Length: 347
Image (cartoon, rainbow, N blue to C red; front, top):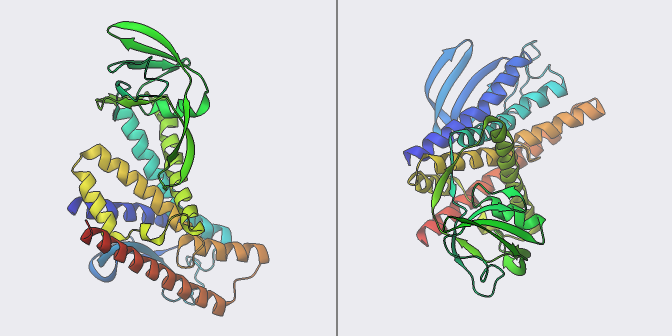
């Protein structure tokens, strides 16, 4: 529980820090930097900003001069006010939060790649009957190379399976190098969204042995960005499936579910916890970019409107859209909490 609260608070802090630094960059005064909502429990003024911890640890915010989500009409015409800045300066401030979430995820992936990534060894545990590998590979075979590509861990194998129709596999067997050729089999299987898809298999199951894979500085950079890209695509595809109805609303999780998963992952060690933290950070960044009023994405849309049409959105419309955004987000939050409780009670 404590680890979950610390991680979520840090993610929120890093998100709001992005907004804070971008606001400072364009000359906007930040009046409040709060972790949590509601009643302020602890506040410390530093260089004109009240740094606070508030009672409800379900988010956070920076309150800039002349800008208040609870009152969309609140404005100030002072030179250090949010209101007097150009739409593009405001968009830069708004992008700061999600941008810092993405940056944090990349830093985590980069650090793990440098220090050593715990992964499955590319060692065959067993072969599946009636598959291409059954007669040519044996338990204990260490896969060294496929089609000239060095194999560092089991994770490298599925990536290669997608790109080739014939595999020239080099394995280490009983201290000797053995070369075999395998033509993968195409099967119908379910993906993580429970959809039936066609995929290639060769029919091997890992031994379960774990190894630490270290990457050089120049290797770690593309590895970090590749993992960031994969995490982003996973979340975007999940949102697409949710909107299209391919996956149900029961898959939505709320703060209780996130805390529960984080607490469980913490039992497996620091690296799994850091990987979950990176995934949550990417998730937080993407969700905040959705064009929903009251989120960063909604405010970006308002400012794009102003930049294109050279006038602000009608105040009455802005108020109604902002209220609708809060109602929508509140409904999602309640649905997520309901789903969390249902899952926990149901085991």
